Image 1 (cartoon, one colour):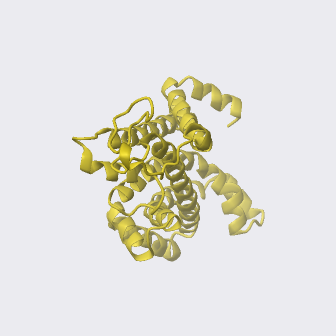
Image 2: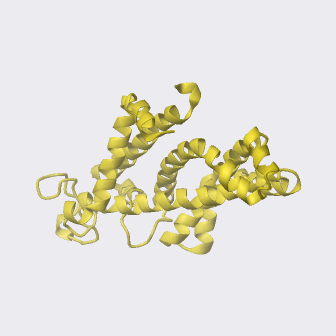
Amino acid sequence: MPFREAWFILKENKLALVGMTIILMIITVAIFAPFIATMDPMSLHVSDRLLPPGEQYRFGTDDLGRDIFSRVVWGTRVSLTVSFFVVLGAGFAGIIIGLLAGYWERIFGFILMRSMDGLMAFPALLLALAIMAVRGTTLPNMILAIAVVYIPTFARLTRNQVMSIKEREYVEAARAGGGGSIYIMLRHILPNCMAPLIVQATVVFGYAILTEAALSFLGFGVAGQASWGAILSEGRRFLYDAPWISVFPGLAISFFVLGVNLTGDGLRDVFDPLMK
């Protein structure tokens, strides 16, 4: 679809524009975090512990006197980094599995998809927790744990798309012209699968943010780094005495997931011919 036509459809969806604005604002905050929050998010000021939002500390402080505003701003980087690489890794692995399972759907595809069904049989959060418990609480391990959870989502969607496309006339023509299987999959099938996969990527991006927050909340976050889920976890002991510790990272998570979902709805309108 030409960019101009896609933009014309997208700009008619006001909610999608709101979602894109939210995402761009949060990405901007992550990029310019050193200039927006100049106070060290890990710096301790015990004499200023549990201060409410005010002139000096805009979002207040936690039980160790750390600035919540700085921690939320810098936590944006951790949460976005995890979600971006989760979508990249899960999408790459899931698309490859789905391509192979859909093109060679008999024995090879059966084995691959039953493996995906086995992964989906585990509760998503429980599977991620198990991987983190075995491999440790580091940033790469968190990305790996969450990515494994969402690989079947991409694999099943890709397989369904491949099975509906591979029998079409232009694919048959490519086979008759001597095109190899890999060439046909990459040149003729995969490009025609991308529209629903792009929409799915936005959905998984939002889910990855929530999963990262849940892992951090349960104590499996990245040690020594501020993330939205970790701040929420630290603030749960002070919900009555200092609710601002949990309120502001919770709002950040809510707004970002809202932005991702609104953008995903707009992209669905762009790529779904039935919505035009």
